[in-house]
Amino acid sequence: MGFLDKLFGRTAPRTNDATSKEEPSAGSPSAHRVRLRVNLSTTIVLGVVQLTGTTTFAREAITALASRHRAAEGGYIEASGSLQREPDNRADPFAVGVHVEGERIGYLPSLIAQELELSEDGSEVVEVQIFTELLPAGLRAEAWVWLGDGPARWQWSASNRPPLSSPAKAAAHHQSSRTMVKEALAGGGARAKDFQRGMVNGVHYLELVEPIKQLKREGRLEEALVLCTAAIAGAEGSRDGREPAPWYTEQAAIIYRKLGRRDEEIAVLQRWLKLCPKEHRDGTRIGERLAKLTA
Image 1 (cartoon, rainbow, N blue to C red):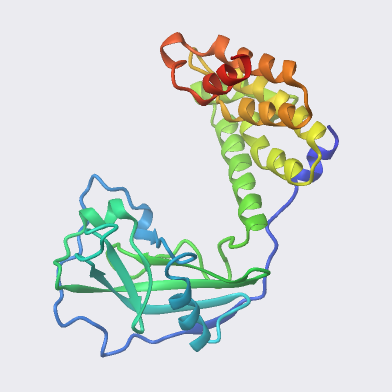
Image 2: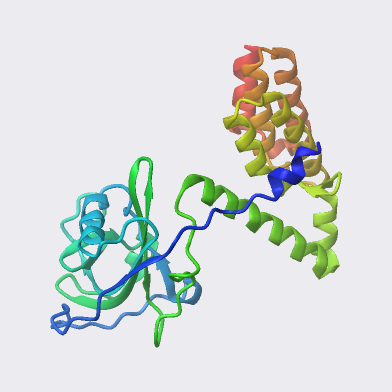
């Protein structure tokens, strides 16, 4: 498995930064200000919240905003925006839209929107940051708002951009997994021992998600199967009486199906079910897949 070093060494590609910043306007919608407070049961890391819908139903609006600011490849916009409830929203009557320069560029996540103290006819000024990237499928934009106290403390910046493309997101996720494993092992104690049980040939099974996905995309199924097998062993080693992480078994079964190796597909599914506590077997995807194969 010498190719693992190459796979694990991949990093997200950097892009050139082009910045565009809108100064807060005196005409920002703040005539009817209300308190912005989120219930303590809702967790918001550092007060930074990523918007939903920026790449789907709000795509045209955020693209129009980016166009006005000439933000495309490596674009960055930091501006004042407003939060506004949408009580007539059929999909979610608690929805809170985020508007910048008259464009609704996205929504707060529903769990946060439901906890927000914001009246139906009120609005609240917030700071917004938007990152854009020109991909083969067109402009992609993602946005965040600051809901904390005091000046915004952003996780990302013009010089430290979030991953926007699928390859960059995959690389970032893989690097995050590697960092988590490294920190857990270095921390000692029970957590380190738990992570040690999940290691196979010096690699933790959590580090194999993105390499497996990449190999499958490239059609290198036999190599992906090698990683799945290693990950299954690691997941079994760290299960601590619970069912092993099922994703790796599911991927192995899919690959066996594509390769026409039915008996091995059945065997890998049975292997997982034997280690799964009886009370957790009913209704699992693995159990359902096995039932269809053996019916």
